Length: 522
Image (cartoon, rainbow, N blue to C red):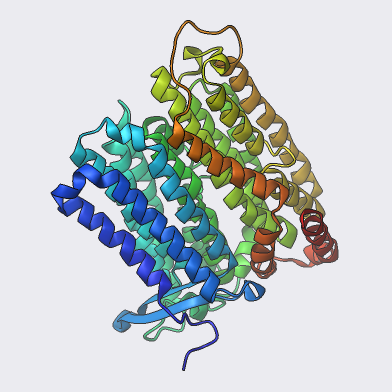
């Protein structure tokens, strides 16, 4: 008999298989290499439509805190491994972000791939589709072992997307990305083994639901297991001081790769903190929360200062993301349901705004031949649409009211203030730095006398890309209530894992804050 949360149709498995098979076909069938771009775009749109159909037919928003669309298949019962899929409200919005950004990236990279040979263009499209399959699997995985396998498997497409299709220093950047990620993965493997040993065991011993609370207490062993997961996710997030791989990767990677890397893949770090670290190790997470929050504030300020000093636009955007991830992690470990709601919403809002920044800088670099700020000046008079899109995305990144970054950043700061006013006040300086690291580069690149050159502004495909992302920023800025309705129940349950006695006093004010925000946007 079908359970309340079981999928009537295996949507998640089908979506993963469609992306995987399409990637394999593009690699292996040479006649398709000439039409790889339209085929890849068509498959990604089909996956988007399939996900919409799955949500409409099977996901109950009123029970967003529960895992739904579940599928369970026995895989290796001897060691307790199952192929288990399912999503709650957080998984829903993260997969939604992913399946929207993938076709946007393929459309944005259309002209760049046109300059490649057919086989290389087909290879890139295939890697993107393979990565999409892995991403959906990670956000839907309910088995810790399967989650870890996909977490590591993700490195392969990204390594080749940087190392084969990036800039002059692409090999060094790809190796640095790989080394950091492998080290984080090996550290996390210790935790994966540890939670199984300390868990209930059995043929489904790696299921997250079975392990939740099984590794309880504040012992040294529990703290070490928590840290093994947290460090792996902090590297991915990226969080100070294990963030240094990111600027090199984004400087050398194609703009579309950077968009997927920072807009989606790095969210696996914050997603894992919420989905694994908090439910598996609630006491250890509570004990470590203050130290992590301090590091998060350091990330906010460090990323802001480094962005201000950056002379390369891609590195600048990477450092802004270090700052933004600091806000997310601050919200996650504050123990406030308000701040946690803001952190999850920020994961989506950041993906849209930062994705737009990377892609529009890619459009600019393709015309100007450089990502160095000093190579430009007065380009607003030459490419007004590119300049306008950069400005809108930048303003969304610095949390201008009415755009995607404002409400999540507001919720994080308000929720954190209710728990720890000092850290919230220091974090506010990150907002001030944000204005500098976006508006000053905009002034240097786009304002001033008109340069003596003639280059085309956005073409039709690039206008569609910009239009979709700007629409997303406006939607999350003016009408975020539907997303808040989905993520708030997950945030409330997740925040309880690290709520301390002093934090309980803020609970009533927290509920009032989110309710007021939702009411003002409906």
